Length: 479
Image 1: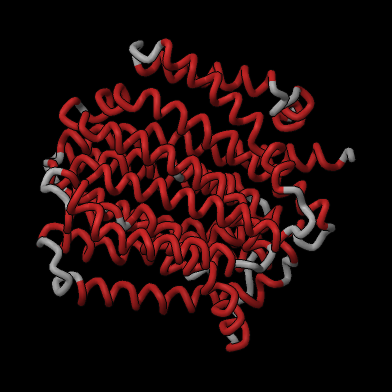
Image 2: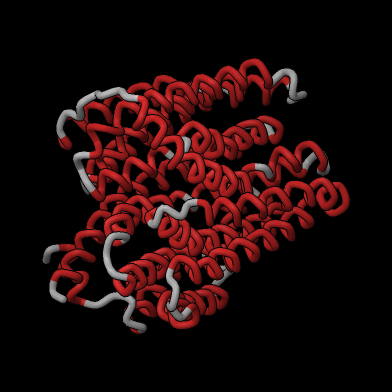
């Protein structure tokens, strides 16, 4: 019993490292977000936002699930790194080469307007560089060295944002901003490789066909499931550009930017919890259920208040950060933030399925949902534009949530779903509701004041409902 609080606090310290780095990155990104929205034209803003929205989709493709397989296997048995590390890098190099070739050859043929086509062509090699750098992070994550990942990510974001601000000041457009990613990601790759050798030790580079086949067999369901989950949002702007009103992509791009600003927080918790769930997969069903409940509660403790706060404060947030000309994007900002919160809850279930080597479950649920959404978009967007797209996102969120909850019957036979939901979600939902009510009363106050008030209200409510206790915080901070 005594080991569990200490273990939880160790994981919380890892989260704090990543959150601290993410907080610095978010401040920098908010500055860039505001400056990009004001300096670029609505058309160039749509090009840049389209690439930024597609970037996660491209990286999921080039990752091919190999990052997840490497983290899971090395977390369970560290000797697996010597067998899988080099084959994973080789496979990623081949997949990235395919992506770059397809984009370079296919962008003009796909009928993209010239500006957007050039942005995609310039950005394709940046995707490959980022993917190779992130593979180094897999070794660090499996060994629990999240402080190194935090520092590397913070250096990367600082260089990207400061360079982009200088380029915008010099009058450079969307193409120049994307081109700046190339040297930054190349340096990040080199630093990450050096960090692995210094902190985790030199990993032998052994190439063999059997590990390659194993990685592909384990990775492709993860990759396809990740592509489906990422495509659910990444497809919105291209489809809206093709079938919506002329000004809609520029307004919806603001909502996508807010979504992408908040969504990486889910990646932070997934990075820490996935190795934990992988190790727990070898333990009893009771321990697995307890680990999953803690994981989903962790995601809910951050996703629900972010969604509640943004729904209440969407209008002042858009006006303050982007300017009043983007106020038509307020409904989309609120709706996509709520969609992000639901997907954060599902993320815990997805990571659990992958740790259990049942990656086919999220693939089936998300793949069918994305396919149906893509078909319905062809009908809904020409008729109802952005409102039709938002309605389909709500339907997609309902489908995936119900599907992942139902999958617990297979992953945890005998577990009570209602008891699981009550333990994982009830207290975070009540705390978020109290915060939202307080924010609503002061929604016309300056944005900085309402955000601070919301953070205080949620922290107080979470403390009152027992989400955190003094012993846990002392262990976490080592007071």
